[in-house]
Each structure stands twice: as structure tokens, then as C-alpha cells.
Length: 459
Ligand code: URP
Ligand code: ZN
Ligand code: ZN
Image (tube, rainbow, N blue to C red; front, top):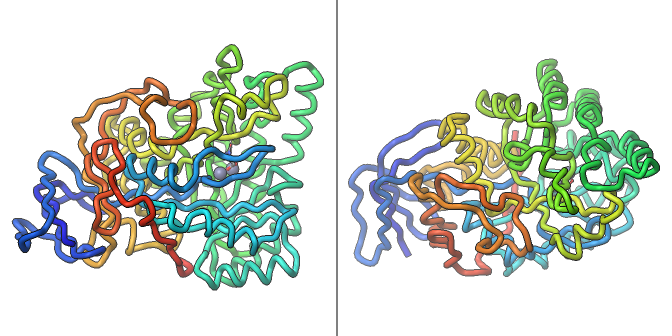
């Protein structure tokens, strides 16, 4: 099967050009003006549209047993929602808790994805415990091509690692050339503040942010950076949400620490007033780190525009409002943390970034695709439009106007954190390795076509 995308404006992280793209089988084989194609080629007219590389979400949770419950999406629903929104590859966290066996978890997470994902996928290996047994398994899974780790400095006793485990994880990562992604919050401060607030009768979702204030995240970020500095490992801070944490990360980079920065769409678009909505509706907006005071957004957008923030992900963690978020009525510490965003990331980043003048098209592509591919060992197979790359392409219509609604979304969750938000563009055609997977807001592909992406450590 061959595919010709004609008349579009190709945008990569480095350049923009008007040219056609010819794909043979799963690969881009020609890029040029006025390309012709043999009979039988599927032709897509992209006049007036952008052609972007398939977008990559480097931080999603599809199967996440967490806080006494389980995320709602499966790979079937999550991958189709991702594709409708232009994401053609995602990186899920392999997330057994410290009480479970890592290798059994690796097998389970693979079984859940294999044959069920419509988009390509790979895993960050969650390191929730470090001992001799875990180390041997980590070496084995890295050798199988999963070349990134994930650690939590919070959620101790479940996912979180202590300082000895953090040190040993980073030391191994340095040896193997593996990058370590980290959720950075000071766990003890969170525990103490939660206890104080609950004792004072402050139990609603609006108290989630005060229990994990900006300084708690800045401290976690600085802590992680110090451990990177001492061990020489490469790090990546996930869902950085506020100016003090950004300052801590940038100060570390300034002194030579290898630290990449991820922001997520909820922190760029929403703020803590959403979690203050009455009648427990604020629970829909409980995630960690929390939605912040709005004044934090400009520094994040500025750093993103300047290339100081590397990627924009989702931290997609879909829990229903009914029956799941409701578990935390009367105690905000029991509200499952997470905001479902996998379907809306690209459109929201385009709308609030490119359309509102906060981000150039090239930076948009870099943050939503190219940098993730480079950092996590997928580039140049993924993350760019080039001869030899996988034919993962997004023909994007900047003239589309619409609104986000839970009533029309593909994500398997009963609310949208972005209900009613207007979007200024959307993918008209999305391809995965040369086959059309989504068109104009609908999944039209093969539900089980996604492949596990084995990687080598990126430099
Ligand atoms: O609130 C969040 N972020 N939920 C998902 C788990 C995590 O911390 O990444
Ligand atoms: Zn996290
Ligand atoms: Zn996460």
C-alpha cells in the first residue's frame, strides 16, 4: 500500500516547506514538489493544511492501579483517543508497586498492550524498589529495549523510592546510559501538610493544592537534580508545574546537570481555581503536582517558547468522576490523582500555544513530538518528517473550530477537564506507519496495529 500526501505545508522542529510526501509501506520514501505516484496509491490533498510528524506523548498512564482503583482506559480506548487527537506514539509507565514483581509487571503491561493498541507504544520502567533482584530485572528489561526509568519521590510505600534506592537507580542508569524520569515532590512535607489540613477539617478538593505547595515541588526538583549531579546520570523531570520548580531545574541545568524538563497540558491551560469548584466538582481537577496559581503559567510558556522546557506531555490518568473521584468525598487525600488529556493534548497546545502566539510552529512540533523522540531513543524513526522515517503523519487543519466535550470524546472516562473549551484546529488525517488511523475526529484504523517500540539508549 502506498500513500501520497500532496500540497501541504510540512512543519518539522527545524523548518517549514511546501512539498509532497510519498510513503511506501510503513516508511516515508520521497519528499518533494509535484510528486507523482503509481496507480492504486491513496492520495490525500493537504492544501491549506499543515503536515506534522506524528505526535509523541512521553507520559501517559493507560493501565495504572493507583490509590485503590484502576484507570478507566484500556489500550483499545486510550490509543484510539490518542490517534483521534494526533498522537501516534505514546510512552506508558510500567507501574508495578514496590510490593509486586517487576518482571511479572513487565509481562502484564506487555500483554495488555499487545494486539490492543492502535498506535505505537513503549514503556518507561517504573522503579519502585531497588534491591539485587530488582537490579537484575532492570538490566534484563533494558536489554529488551526499554531504555528509560521512572521514579517517584512521592507516594512512598507504594511507587516511591527512598534516597538509597534513588542513588542506586541513578547509578545503574548512568552505567547503562538510561535516562531517568522523575515525579519530584518532597513526600514527607506532603504527608505532614495533609495531616495538618485534615486535622483542621479541611477535607475538600480545594485543599489538595495547599497540601502540595510550590515549594514542595521545588524542593523535590532540587533533590532529584542533586542526585543527578552526584551520580552523573541523565534525568527528566515530569509534569513540572510552577515557577519555583522551574527555577530549581534551570539552576541545575545552568551548573551542568543533565536534566530535561516536561510540562503537561493541564498546568499550562488550567489553574487551581478549577479544583476550588463547589459541590466536589473540583475533584475532577485533582492531580499531582496540583493545578497552580495562574501566575505560574507565563513562566512555563516562556520557557517552552525558549526551548528551556523540552516536552509537553499529558500525564493522562483517567478516573471517572462517579465512583472513582468520589472515593475522596470527605477526604481529599483519597481522590484518585489525574486528569484525562490524551485526546486533547495536541489541539490544546496548538490553540493555547501556536494560535495565541505563545509558540512558533517549529517549537510546537519540537515540544509535542521531536524532543521526546530524541530524549527517549526513538529519533529519527519517530519525531520528524524525513525520508526513511516511519510514515506517522498528521495532516492538521488550522481552520477547524470546535469545542471539547465529554459527550463526544473517545477517552473512556465520564468527564472532560476541558469541557466547553474552544479549539482552533484539529487533525484531519492521522497515519501510523503509512496507514490511515483517524480522520476528522474519528478513529478509522486497525485497532490492534500498534507495535512495541524497542529502543537503544539515546545520547
Ligand atoms: O496526578 C497524577 N499525576 N496522576 C498520575 C500519577 C502521576 O503522578 O504521574
Ligand atoms: Zn507523577
Ligand atoms: Zn504520571
